Image (cartoon, rainbow, N blue to C red; front, side, top):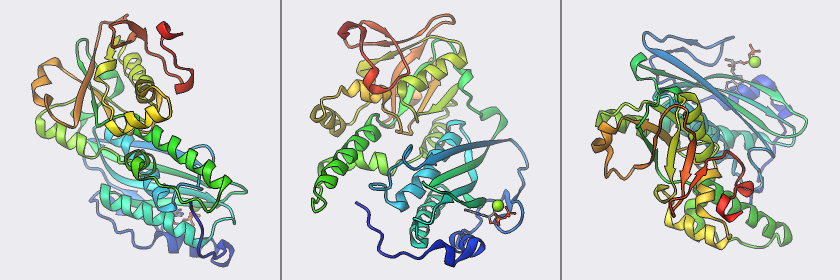
Length: 350
Ligand code: ADP
Ligand code: MG
């Protein structure tokens, strides 16, 4: 659990001193970044293609809990979840802006650590921090990031592009981030009851890492390009597989079938689900925050991705007018629903 070692009041530095301190050591790497931090606005130049823009806001107590979210991880995660949306457009992220609202409860050193995480993410994903805003808040911490990216006009992957009979493919594995959160919540309760307890999280490393340090799938658009596969539609998994598959189905005006037995779940996540007496399928469908990519490809491209450890074919698109359905292990078809994990019930189990 987090303890703050040092505490220097934000008031001592003043707004401009604080901005200068936080935003130092952010070099510009992208050719499209003409001017970064320091003027009234950043100056960008995109010479061709499409520019994509996406924002996400993280609110303390709603999206994160500082008692188990280290500030470096918070900064990194805030950037990664934004970039995930850019990758979902099959675009390459180029710049971010960071808006932060903080109360006096936070020391400068704490904000330094958040920016350390942001700086690390800028290095990993090769994006430039080109601006932002800093303001005070009476209560919690709010971190809002806008990401900008570029993509060739013919390569943009919108949610609406799926075609009948396209295969539904997902990257990585699902349910880990949600189970990581369950583990952290449980440890927090134990810690509150006995502050000297030293949690042993070694069995839960993968799940906890999926929750605290999600990776935007920078590698997936690159890999697909290399394999010569252009997805017809793509979306990132922030809210859970069910809800995102429904978005694809609705935007593309098609039905779909998603096979329960195909959903990729890591063995360690199965184990934690058993321990928590939760259905791994339910968690993978509704857990959220996995930040994997869900996309559709023409049936003819199946050979190009077949056997690739990064991809799992989990279903296919059906005709216009059909609905989205989960095909259970026993063959029963259940309407796919976007809802919280605890209100999800299979009809045959209800
Ligand atoms: P203004 O008053 O014109 O909005 P600011 O004093 O807020 O300007 O910001 C000065 C510069 O610092 C601008 O380039 C702005 O984009 C940048 N900036 C301010 N806050 C942040 C932040 N939290 N992170 C990154 N850049 C920031
Ligand atoms: Mg400002």
